[in-house]
Length: 543
Image 1: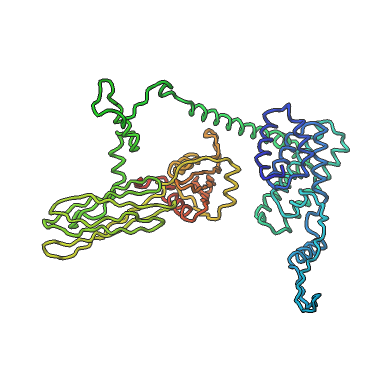
Image 2: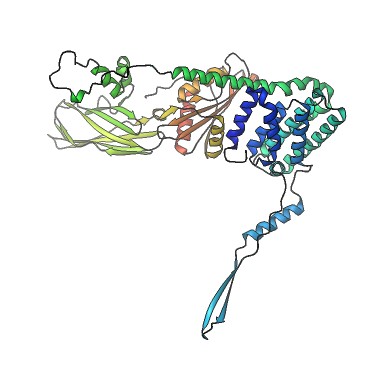
């Protein structure tokens, strides 16, 4: 548990403890004995949750409580003035570099030489034997403090049910209350990144204290605290298992050909086709190779990628058919000469805005009266962000020798052309969420009145996958979900949807959608996309 993979190990242990009750006593005993070796805050949180939920015998409850309180120590959980001065002095000593002393010496042969001596102070031996759990609390981990309070409360509430004597139960309760008071005091005076969690921590600890002190509150909260957590986790594991089973069923191998079937190599076949050697599947092979397996939607798919570049009244009419294939964008520009004169040196000069680079620029052409031609250009894309392609048509009238210029309409490249749905574990999502520095926060403003319908609309419009399981039959006033996708360039896009249905706002939805990514372009472009589609009406997108 103290290694880099400790989080994956403890997540696996948590699932094993829930699914195999017969293994719980041995696992809990081992976990209690190794609690002092845990150095990661998140791993410690999961360990304490397991101990609070699954210690159901008098021995395990007593051992777990004693281990946690021993590791936690007594309040206060703040750095004392003397300890702080000692830490600052040790840091100052460590920051000092080695001292250099230079002096002249006489060698054995009578000559003079310069001698330089480096002297480095001895590093004092580390004598800090403070347990890791206490260090984490003193460092200002407010969330861990709330987990400790909840775990100790569950042990105290379960102690009378496992036949612990009243004196021991009273002693456990008093220790828990003192520890919780120290945790709240630590949260109030410590300046840390979790300072915003102070109100939540105080409310949770207050609830735990009432459950221990007030018999009426204890009667109301005992069942919820001791059983609802395990039942929710069991339902979560069941959902994960059903999802994995569905994925296995969908991935079942379908036999398309037998192992002893002959393989036909079209390139090695003789020019004169023999009877029975005709490959009648040429059409489907070509469709699969070009990506147009569905021939019925071919025309509509192409028309959705056609952009009009110039007006019908311009001397030269131009429209572009855009094909996006991962890193490459291919432009097929149709040029129609609408004049009765020959146009010489006709050139389409293109420029890009965004992380796009023109690889193949169109060449100059000569086009006859009322004639047409197709000009191709290739553009390389290197990152996921919204881009624009704009340009000008330059030509020369062969009869009047006058030059003409036509400014073309912009081609807007949608970020949805590069986004692909993907999945990841909750641990990986949280790790990336903490690591990524670019965030775009979008306020929710929509005409959609249902929470699940709004979430489905955002998932469909952004081409992302929802990682948070939710029951469509449950009706509530709040919904939170995590969405995830990867770009064709391997970039990760993280979205958190937090939406609430407020009764004081005529039942309209309110909240925020937060987008995080490693690069600025994908965060801004995805935010613009969500802003344009969240009202409930689909924009005229061209993909």
